Amino acid sequence: MGNVVGNALNCTGAGGHVKVKATANRGQVLAISIADDGIGMDPADLPNIFYRFYRTGQSRGLGSGGTGLGLAITRAIVDVHGGTVNVKSAGHGMGSTVTIRLSLNG
Image (cartoon, rainbow, N blue to C red; front, top):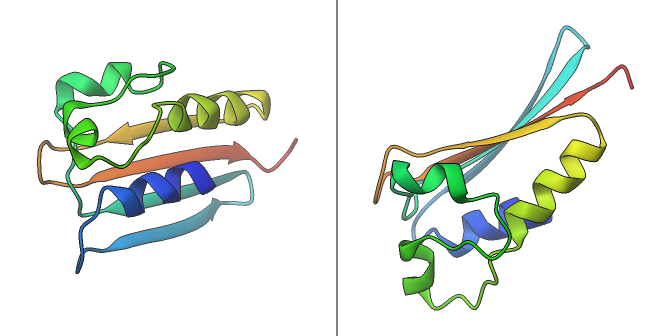
């Protein structure tokens, strides 16, 4: 969660918003969504963002000092727990949403 929320905060400018939402689907699956209205991503970048050291052009331009490891680490942790993580963005300036899903049944 720290990696994803940190990314959202780093990619959202002053006056922007980051929303964290958690829902449990019939007690079976916990879905946690982190949505921001920040810089967004080119849809062409989405297949690559979970690779180690991959950074989108927009994130490199922020000068945030990120290494491109946060989402790779997030996916590895979620995978170990049998969950999934995905990211959606409509494009530059349209924000991003990361959704993590974890089974509540072990």
